[in-house]
Image (cartoon, rainbow, N blue to C red; front, side):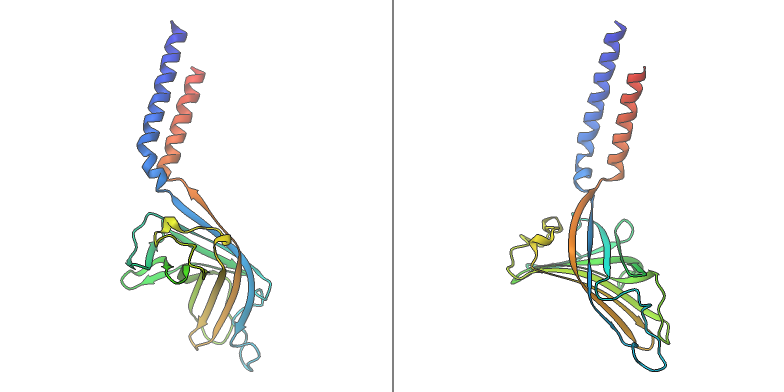
Length: 239
């Protein structure tokens, strides 16, 4: 009778676990999407290179051939801030959204969104589904690592990555969930990282993407459910 009782209890635990999983399934489908991108620098322009009395803005760690990498984290079911039949602009506040890039000795993260969000950090995504399709992720950034030279002080940092398909077949709509996160779906890509000082000096880094991938990041509730279920089953086995 005791063994039968344990078996009934185990089945009850599994049933409860299944019911909880089905209840939280919509949250799991709405999980955050992490987009990882990487590539190589194709061009570097520094206004102060070769100018007497000025040191370059960049520290020399970024040259043609330098690798860059970064990631974006966003909810792909979010509604657009504004849209037309062929375009949509999405705004993501951080957290829970995230956007970061590293190139050479420099790391930048998503910075102030500006009006109407003020100093709230975040980034934006533009989708174009028309004569050509494009997916454009950009931010006014905060420099988290890497010093600037020149003769002024840091005035602004920006970075973005962009993919385009001139055949207009990459996108089926302007919904984020329809974006194919794979370079094979796009005919062109570009990365841009810009640093400006208060004397109008500018350093611009451009590159091409070599990889673009996406993974689903489960909601915390999903992880909690799994942990509770596993702990419950472990406890039943030890009983």
